[in-house]
Length: 237
Image 1: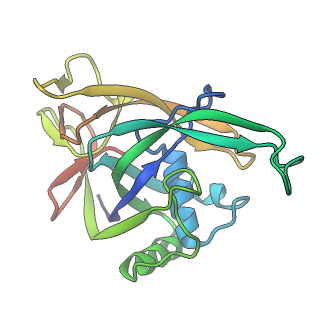
Image 2: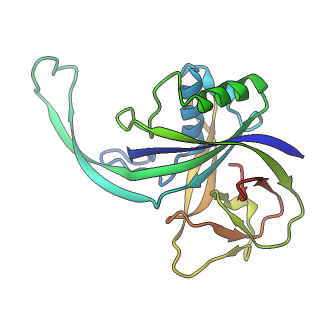
Image 3: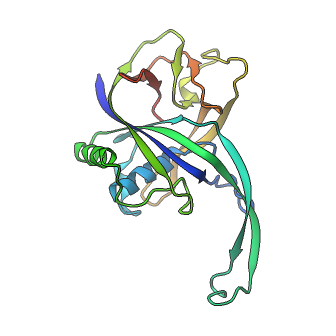
């Protein structure tokens, strides 16, 4: 079974995808979450904030995420003011440190069961345009993208061999011994939100595996997607 996938790389000098359990010193996920990628694509298409989630359920939208630049993080102090009291003068100011991704670049693999949504995004990507301005998590972290192209993605079933993967890997698809950890590589896991309901409440989290320096991961996975022409194997999150 084959589907068409749109592949593009999104980048920004700085990015931030806030971990919800951090407050006074916000920390960022190392990768854009599936929910964040859905929001970025929805902004490209011009969907409103209140409506787009119903179009990006896991049943409708297939999203894979790869790391193109090594994951680097920096902490930057920012001044926050009380806007209720500080319209003309700054009466209350709080300085906090926020963790940012630095020189972030990620590859997005996207397919959709709705042909109109898919074709609309393809047209925008080909013309290097968006309806709304896109950002790397925060509105201050404006992002750019490069369209790699449209490719056929073929589902591989019953694989028993080690394969190199270009995307992050959901841990629920892996069993003990399925990953070949190589020397001089840095492997991490994070638990990320992958789907929200229309009230913006997280319905599902997944723990994913990635290599911090943008290297491919060798793993044995029974079922995955092979993107032809660019020779990349991915998992959908």
